Structures are given as C-alpha cells and as structure tokens.
Amino acid sequence: MNEAAGSTRSDPARPAVLTRRADFLAANRGLRNAKPGFVLLTRPNAGCGMRYGITVTKKIGNAVVRNRMKRRFRELLRAILPEQGLPDSDHVLIGREGGIERDFDLLQQDLATALARAAKGQGDPPRRRRARR
Image 1: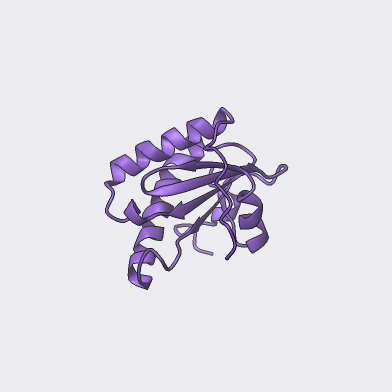
Image 2 (image 1 turned 90 degrees about the vertical axis):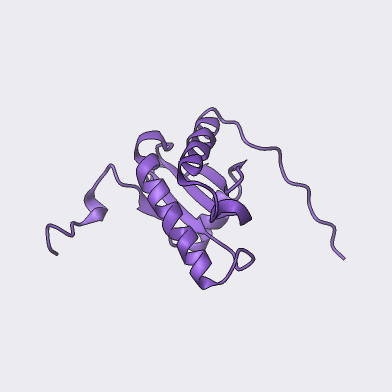
C-alpha cells in the first residue's frame, strides 16, 4: 500500500469502524445521549479499542441525503473522537431529522457534550416501549 494513502488499521490514535450488526445491537444496550442532529450510543467493548459506527435510516431522506449525513458524521467523529472519545468503547451515531441542516460547529459542540456526559456515565432516561397493536 502507498505510504501517502497510509494504512489506518495500525494507527492507534485512529478509531476502528464498526461493521458487524451484532456490534451495533450491543451498542444499543449502552448509554444513549440524544441531541438535535443525532443520537450517540456508547458502550464499553471489553478491550477492543475505540470504535465507531454510523447509521442513518431511510426516514431521513433519499440515498443522497443519507450519504451526505454519513460523510458529515464521519468527519465529525474523526475530528473529536481521538481526543474526547471513551477508551475501549463503541460509539454509534444515529442520524436524526435535523442533522443534515445543522451547522457543523453546533454538531461538534453537541458531540463534545454528549461524549462528556457519557464519560460521566450519564445518559438520557430509557425510552418508553411502544405498545404493540
């Protein structure tokens, strides 16, 4: 591989990417911090290092909108996670309706706040279960 492109797997400061569905489901059982543009899920991962994942549902928009939101989230996580992320934890960002229009600086502030709350062990109260029809 070209040195300029770099191998990101061996860089300890750069978080790994979650790819398995089981990892996303496990993160869903962790702490939840909701912000206007996203929901941050955090959960310890038993020594696997700092990892992140991004998910945006079809409710948000078409493929162009979802991919744009994922690119913004990826850049957001690359900027903040190495310094402020929780060590040996999984971080999952779930896109919300206002995330695509929200100013990038506000998203950075929101993520920093959510990570600080998660580091203290604080999360939003559990969601109410929906009644089955």
